[in-house]
Image 1 (tube, rainbow, N blue to C red):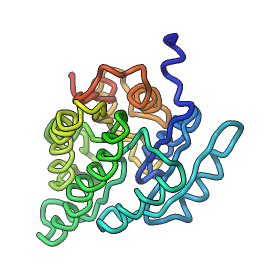
Image 2: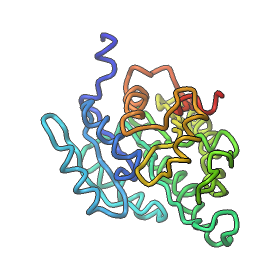
Image 3: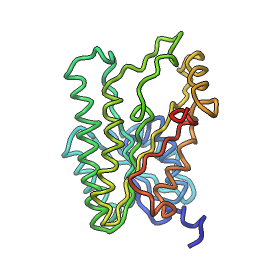
Image 4: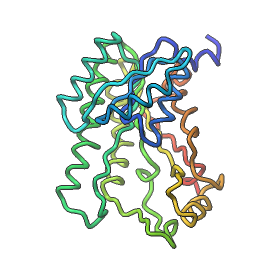
Length: 261
């Protein structure tokens, strides 16, 4: 197999949770373009159906399945439906996240617990459900979508002059935990041919961001800008493909140098 051929996902089956979000859209596009039959799963299937239609081009196969990451029954039903339809699964991208703590650090304990039910317990259940399938097959790649906020503490200076803040404890808690959980999963399944890695993106620029935030955030990076709608695609295809067969347990920041500065 040549180097470029090793990046191909032809014949592979991928699942992306939360595929209609900021990162999800480009992840789905990358996997489908690289040749994988790509399933996208979330609670709001209407939004996913519209996204799937966008990506159904020549040689691209994108399908939709329902998922409530906060319910174990829904996760197991998704696993069974996907396997019934495809017969196997090669790639799991844990991208879905719930952000219920609108009042940040001053929110109540029940709201924090709700976040953990999806973002921690849900992550554990879906990773085990599909990881066990991959282990039975003898191969697979699990990719966790983390955040630089799982690697460092909040920097209040990037929010100066705006109404934004970074005081969301659940996000820092579960994204930090995700990185070490990635290492656990890599160790647990490694002898059975299943790899697990984490990608930790930096800030994704949107039209809603105040110019002061964009400027201050960009100055905090080496590359002088926030992430765009294609910056995650290369690393996702790399980790999903045979080009990365000897990489597992890694956390890769995709942040323009934010965490290295």
